[in-house]
Every structure is written in C-alpha cells, then in structure tokens.
Length: 257
Image (cartoon, rainbow, N blue to C red):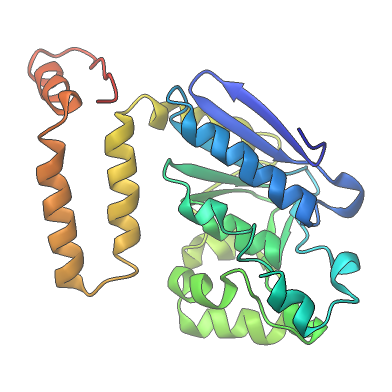
C-alpha cells in the first residue's frame, strides 16, 4: 500500500486518510492511484457499509500537485487522459462516502470533497477553487459540481476570484452539511458513518443512485427512476425485515440482501 494514504477499518466503516503532509496533501498520481485501489477494496468488501475520507488538521488537500504538472503540455495531459484516468474512481463508488474536511480544501482538494456524497467540515475549514490564478480552470468537476451545490452566482464568484470560502459560508451555501470543532469532525464523521452502515447496504446504494439522478435528469424522469427503485426495494429480504421490525418494535437485523 502506498504511504500517500492511510487506510483503517472501524467495524463497518472504512477510513481513508490522505497522507502527504509535507505538501498539504497535494494530489499526485501516486496518491490518486492509491485512493482508487483503497476504494476498490472497500467496494468489494461486503462488510463495509460507508467510507470516510479525510486529510490532516492543516489540509484536506491543497489541490493537484503543481510541481508535478508544471512542465506538462497539451499532449501530455491529453494522451495521459489527465484526471479522467485516475481521479474519477470516487465518482463511480457505489457506497456512501463522507468527506471530513479540516484545514484547506483547495482546487482539486475541494473538487475531491465535492465528489463525496456529503461534507462534514471543521469550523476552521476553508474551501476554494483558485485555478484562475494559475491560468487554468477547475478540471475535476469544480465548474460543474460547485454551481449545483451553491448556485450559479456564488460558483462564478468563487471561480472568477479564487477566494476562500469558510465553513460557515459553505454550510449556508449548501456545500457542507455539518460543521464541528476541528478536533471532533473526524470522530463525528465516523459516528455518522457507523449509523449509516447499520442500514441495508443495497438500499443505501439505491438511495445514492436515486439522489444522484436528481442532478442528471428532468424531474419526471427522476421521479420515474425513484418510483421504480422504490418498487425494487420490495424484492429485498431487508425490506421484509425492516417492516417486520418496525411493527414488532425491535431493531432490524439486516442481511444486506
């Protein structure tokens, strides 16, 4: 396993820590490849029901590794399929993912957090898309996911200026779902993930797919997808157990089938 990430298992929760502290967890090929490998393992492990991704106290991730990119030209990035090749594994990961953000989440680091299903932020966290200052644009979803999270006007503001957005503003705008003190945010994310992981895994996967469909479909198409997915849950053993447990006033024992 690459030293660029730290992987832990907490019962049914997988924890991935970005681990290049000397460069504020700047995202290079080695780290992104390692992240993809860890996600592959967690997706294949039926005992894992939710994943938390975090960084260090100072930085979730300070963006793509500029030192690595400085000498690249158009053909380098085009032929190597930069970003698409190894950054988008998180986009296709089917289980719930929480980003626990402390410190800065800049550029690609902010985009990585936005690829997660929800973001818990430390009260000291800061988010930014500062690529304009390098004469490039966000390329890992920043110009697409940020407007969906905070609206067009604020997304344009952030992209045009590269300014920092603190945790409170990010929560007001809808980018962040919860804010905690910096020394508590990872534990709180793990606790929330543990609660999520107790639910039926196929239902969690269906929920994730259905909510994501809301951003990619007209309303009526999304509603049809939701309705058909709801109908599909009635084929699950977990649906039978969940409803029986409710009526019997006991905790359900899901078998993830």
